[in-house]
Image 1 (tube, each protein chain N blue to C red):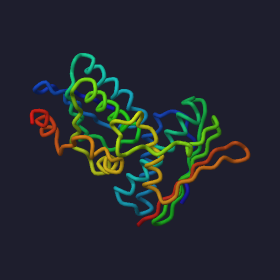
Image 2 (image 1 turned 90 degrees about the vertical axis):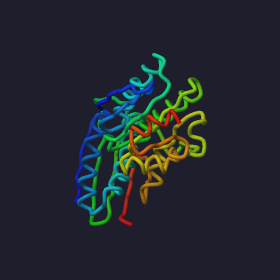
Image 3 (image 1 turned 45 degrees about the vertical axis):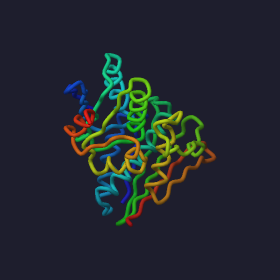
Image 4 (image 1 turned 180 degrees about the horizontal axis):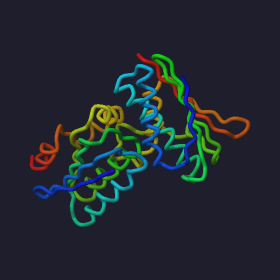
Length: 137
Length: 113
């Protein structure tokens, strides 16, 4: 199964995206905790896309593609906003979160921890694509 | 995001209802910060009705807890995490540095112990 959507760069869409991916996750056979993992990973990518990639400009859009089979879900997020490589972010210092200079980097850390695959690429046309995959354990 | 405050024994219990994400985190931060500016330093963040938290929500928790501890000799207790939200606290390691309680009553009483 595959579903494709276009959303404006507005954090108000995050709740709807969470619902959509939960429904897809259920159809693919994931349990509630696994669906929570997928929702969090996708929320982090979409937040990053909206705020850093598209600067929360509501007139700009990004594309979300969700495709799944039994026991596996793959999600693609395409946008063509400001140049930004999220892979440049450092991992957070988890031993010292309350004392460190910033609490940044947690989103990317979640992505790596919770998904089986998470990669980012910039195409020749400047379109940036996140691809995240989770498989049932 | 719906936010309610109850004050018990000088502890401000802030109950959230809804997703705690990039769309709602500023509202939560402003709500608590307004009360810090009025002199409150002991807070319970009751998350019984929060089905989802992202790093944006965690960032607010971290910033507020750090500020209360370092500048006001206060603290932020967390209560009633749903399983998926509890998992986020665990993988971030925040469960090791914050006081997390099963319910809001215990989290409030935790300030007197």
